[in-house]
Length: 417
Image (cartoon, rainbow, N blue to C red; front, side):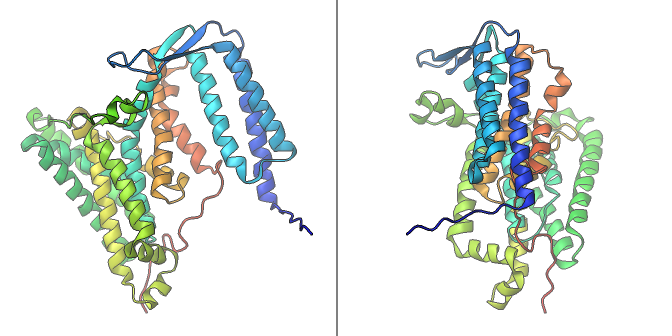
């Protein structure tokens, strides 16, 4: 005897399912009309760097035919989604559809041309670093129910301090100073939000404005007048033997600076800590139900202070990437909103360190895409190319991937009775 269990969807879920289907049909129409129509030539994706000792690897596809095939697949998926839906697999189908759309877009952009696909993926990993670290900082804070809007300011403070101290001393001391400044700024957030119970959103905005104004003033008064204080050495790429020689994957993951390796290590360590240790269990309990955690003997205040300060130190490390991991010098507001994109990555990743890293790679891909398209001289205006990572952020925060549930006590001050 079998039991048939019907799954009843709410009106909101039904509307979202229909919206996804319509979106897939619109993507199919764009691919057919814009990418496939009138496109000639083949597109070549180089899968190995020219400097590699590996055999020349390349994938060549007919640009127009590829776009027509992708358009047909997207139209089929959209029709199925509207007619009967994919259920819990809708997000997976949506993600695969976006990948197909991007592939058709790249084939159109590189029609009768070639470009290094591996180089773009390598740049994706590099560009994802500050976003991933910003998202990880947000995870550390919000898992104990403290909203950290000040990540942008902590990144900017770390970038300025890294450049200045690195120029005065050396890059290692500059890196340590950047991490320390991130911890100091997060301590300010912790005191305002936890001790004085200031609105956490306002406290974060105050930190962002404070750091932006302070770094702009100090940059004009010190760095501009003394250029020798704005030229630190940078951390070079470290090629990992054997692993870096793996075809395709070697250059993408195993030939980077300590910032990339540090990001992966921190994500792994925080994931293990949150879900495999007593500290992680207590942190998640404080984020979900601080009163119950306090009843069981957990020091809610101390745990919130600890996590917020550690999260700020992670953001300071991410800020140092902009200077010590890139150009070695500081420019005003050089973080360019990466802290806010990191918050979007945290939401996209559902407050999980690995999810935040995966979302950061998506944003990093959008960021690296603009540079690659500029090299290919596509007819898209450069202003629109520069908008790519921010457009991806808007798409994520509007809930196209589904509603994400934050920790239950997120943003709520705790008063011990």
